[in-house]
Every structure is written in structure tokens, then in C-alpha cells.
Length: 304
Length: 304
Image 1: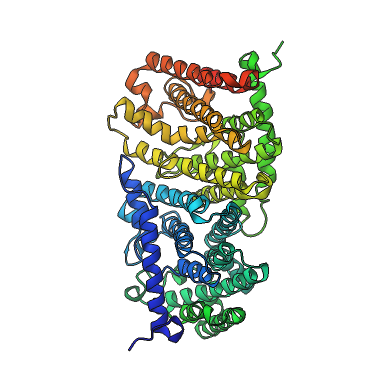
Image 2 (image 1 turned 90 degrees about the vertical axis):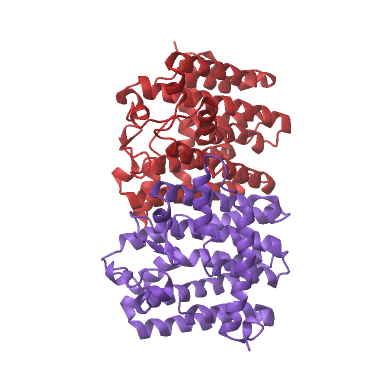
């Protein structure tokens, strides 16, 4: 019998993720323009890249974080949708031939394979604009101060000193030997900053006291770091059938990962420590944070 | 003897453009991160793409519009810088091999030639994020409602139903025959929306009455349409030495332009009508709008 709450084990968190994923999928579907007019191909590519499923971990973080502060779930789902659009744009661009050159994403052809390169570049560009449009719209929060803070935090997490900067370092580091701290910073930028934003967004929406927002940011940083190591472990150990994307690519490309640096066992141990540490930041939120705790455990135990 | 104000003729508007361009150049230089750390290459590419000169017409529109409402010039320059970053990102991505495949921009190698494709894609991505970051920051305006409105208007102008949508239609239309209204819509999206935003931004910053904002938006739409026709005329008539970019490319690529549809003389006549129409929207602003009037005349008389 499957447990009924996210706190009850891996099946519980999968069910909770699936429920949140359905919510955010509906929000994305509503928020993205319908494919009409001569630009329909662009709008189709945006939908293809964003509505193709996925765990929606970032949206889950937003929505679970928002629930801690009794934020209107519709507002939280909008912010979750915006983060997923931002994330989807980054995957579309990362997959391009000039970047990681990946043909497969979530078990389907990547956007530039399903459409073409120009359409994929433009769809990514438009998804980024759409994410900021959603955050700035009054429907996201009645207080414009909150909306500005969301847009500011997302822009900082996504830009040159965040996700895009991390991707630049990642590409530049191919075939080079980076030290542990350099790899950790690379990954904190490339995937960590957006995950941290997602964990903090609920506190921003809920106008939470500063120290509570800081706790969620710290939780997000640790979850993000654990997630990235787990992702690299899956690349090293998993099969394409399990993960829905090509595996073994990091090693082939000479990518700088902690798995390559520390070895499988030590990397796994570090991911476990980070997941424990992440949960420790949630103590003051009591049982209401069980979904976030379960997610921290899930990111280091998932098989895809 | 050169005239001393923008209203006095083509030399006046060039001097006014140059003065505003210097202001916005300084703002961009201050607002872009310094090229440090392992992501320095990305930050260099962002600077290369944005600080390479140019007329800064969009920033000029923002700053002249803001002056109508006595907006703090530092705030206006920040918004001007944000628009120029957004514009620069679009040029970097448009020039990519998968898009227009242009090796030359403003008389220099385009970003992917000066750096490489991956860096150019990422620099464009980061410039877009940076533009929204600037708009959302408290230094841009003390009222968060104003900042949200700026971010919302820029996102709408830049996204799938704006600039990026226009670029998609433009690419899809290569080698096809579009009717006049279709070409006009394509260009209204591709270049018009961002120019319209630039013209409106001063009114947003100045919390101007709705009808005044509407007048500036109408001015921006007409200036944008005139500008695009003039740009296409330059492509058809000009030389690379004059324009600083490759010319004759539209015809070679079978691009849908009003110049190709109407012929040179009729297209030039239409641009002149649009420039006159643009100025007519400014009547209520009196002599304070002389800079904007001069710009409307300039866009149809420029040689590069």
C-alpha cells in the first residue's frame, strides 16, 4: 500500500512530486501562448521544450516552500511555471550542437533535433523572456515589491554570475583538470543557483522573515549540490534507458565532475552528507517541511 | 557652424545622439560585471557585444522620453542600458550561423567570430538576464510598481509575441512571398516592439498619464516602422563600408522586406510618411520633444 504523504518514503515523495508536477504542467500550459499565426513554429517549440514532462523538482521546491508560508497555491504555481520555463530554456540551449551537442532529452529528441537549430535558439530566448513576464505580472503577487524581488533573484540566479556563468566555466573546463573547490563553484553556479532560487521563492512570495528565507536558501544550496553529484553519478553509472538521456558523456567529454575527481564511493558519500545537511536547515519548520525533507533524500536516491 | 540643439538639423541630432550614447555607454560599462574569474570569457563577450558603439537609438528614446517627465537621468540611463543589452543580445543571436550567419557587425567581427558559437549563445543569454536584473533593481526606480511595469513591458516586447516571434517569422519567410500587411507585422514584432518599448519607457518611469504614454507608444511604433524600412533601404542601396555590416544580404537571402515588395521609391516614400506621422504624435509635448522629432527625421535620412 503506498504511503499517503511525502514524508513516508520514496513512493510518497514520488507521488508528491507527481501531484505538484501535474499542477505546474497545467500552469505552464495556460501561461504559454497557443501556437497560432506565422510564429506558430516558435510557440510549438516552446511547448515541446517545456511541457515534455520531467520531475519538475524546481517547481516542487517553489510550491512546497510557498506552502510553509500559506501562499496562494495559484501564485506559487505561476512562479513554479516560470522557473521551469527558465530551466527548460537552459536545457534547450545546452543541448545545441555548439554547446553539449545532445540529441536526446527526457527520452525524446532534443529541441534542435525535433525542430531545427534556429528555432531552438529562439524558443530558448523566448522562454527566458516569458519567465520574467510571468513574474512581473500582477497575478503572480498583489505586492509589486514581491514581484520585483522574484524577478531580481531569478535574474541573478540565471545570469552571468549564476547559471549561464556556470555553463561557460563547464564548457571551458572540458579536458582540463579542475580542483574540488573549482568544480563545486562551477556546479553551484550552473545548477545550484536556480535550485536555490526555487527553494527561496516561497519565502519571497510569503514575505517571510529574513532568517527563514536564509534557511531555505541554505537548504536549496545543499540540495542543489547533492542533486548535481547524484546527476553525475547517474551519468557515470546509469543507462540511457533509465535516465532518458545519453550517459557516460561526462567522461567522454572530459567534463569536470566531483565523481571523476573523488571516485564513485566518495562522491556518493558526499551527496548523502549534503542531503542530511539540507534537511537540518528545515528544523524550525516542523512537519510542514516534510515534503522538502523527502525531496532532499530523493535527489540522492533517484535512479533517473 | 554646427547647430546647438537636436531640433536644428541632422548635425544637431547626431550630436544629441552622441551625447546620449556616451551617457549610456558609461552606464553599461558600470552595470556589466568585470571580466574576472573562470567565467571571464563570458563577461568579455558580453562587453564586446554591448560596448562596441552603435547609435544607441533605443537608449536615446528612453532618455529623451524620460526627460519629458523630469525623470532622474541616472534612472533613465539604467533603463537605456537595459534596452541596449537586450538589443545587443538579439544581434548576437541573430548573427549566429544557424540564424542569419553574419560575420560582421558594427564594422567588427560578430560575437561568434570574435569568440566562438558557444560563448556567443551564452553571452546573449546572460545579457537578456542582465537586462531584467537591472530593471528589477531598486536603483532603477524607488517605486516597485514602476519597476515591474518596465520588466513586464520589456518582456512582452522581447518575447514570443514580440522581437523573438518576429525573428522566427523572418527566418521562416525566407524565399517565400509575403503580402504587405504580413511584412509590416513581421517588422513590427522583430524591431518595432523594442523601439516602441524604448519610446514608452520614459512615460513608465515618469508615471505619466495613460494617454501620454499611448502617444509615445504610437510615436515609437511609427519610428520603428520607418527605421526598419530605412534599414532595408540601406541594405539594398548601401555599401558595407558605409553601414559597417554586410549589405545586399536581404535580396540574396530572399528576405521579405517592404523594399523588395514596393520598390525603392515607394518604400522611401512610406518611410517618410511614417516619420511625419511619428512627429505628429508629439504635438502636446511642445519644444521639449524636439529631440524625439529630430530622431524621427534622422532615422529616414541616415546613411548608416
